[in-house]
Length: 90
Image (tube, rainbow, N blue to C red; front, side, top):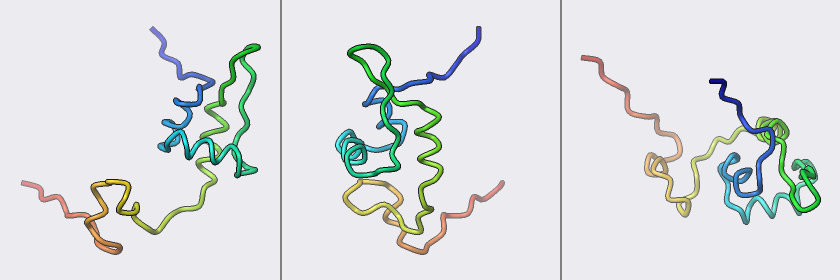
């Protein structure tokens, strides 16, 4: 059996692919001129090309900061410059 990745994603899946919420996805559609445009799949359906979403994400600037406290991300407690705990080998 050959497994293939989808070429197009619906809005919710495209947002999940980018690790953002649907509202943020919609804001990017409206405000970011570089954000990929939807492709027409049929008369009543659109989708976003995975390749264009991946290219857009790869072009985003690298971040030096941790997620803000309101994201509930578990790594925020480490502080701005701390390193992860080294793994000990036994």
